[in-house]
Length: 230
Image (cartoon, rainbow, N blue to C red):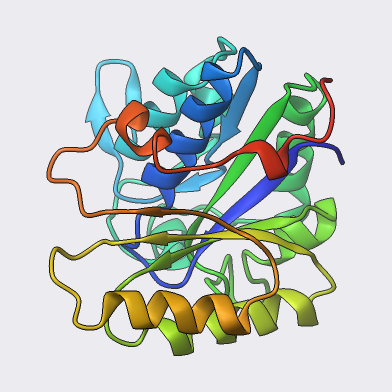
């Protein structure tokens, strides 16, 4: 599946949406068409138009294709908790095959770069029987890993990379996102990650107080993700 990737993180709140939007902006600047999907989003707010998620709205405003919100974020959950628990409380059942079908609708548009953003880390449950990692596995989609640069990130990154490989998927690249302003031995941690992770580092994003996708794009290289124009 050319130029379509699943974006995961080493934990929650590591900046998946920020990095995804930055990659979209970087591709936009190259004159490429872009699309994004946030299949499951918890912590949505009630609006006159329905439940809306801030991360999904950021992706929608950054991508170049004009798609309705419901196609970008088909499962919007109000409680700001783990998706499978939020779904249970909302009387909803999440299913990887159903989500894969929804995602295929956007993938068929064949944007030059399409990103599907996960929720939390790689092993987040969808239900009592399925994990969200089943979605990229069903789509056979390569993965971009966002590493939240903070204490413990090396262990989290290597375990996540191992889990992705165990699921039979390719880790296409990773991004070092400085999600806290002052991490001790930052350079040494990045060097260690580069030593142990074979896929390319797509960029190092510094801590930004009020970042925009365009600001983040300046620190990212989307070229390794673009193999051809759709």
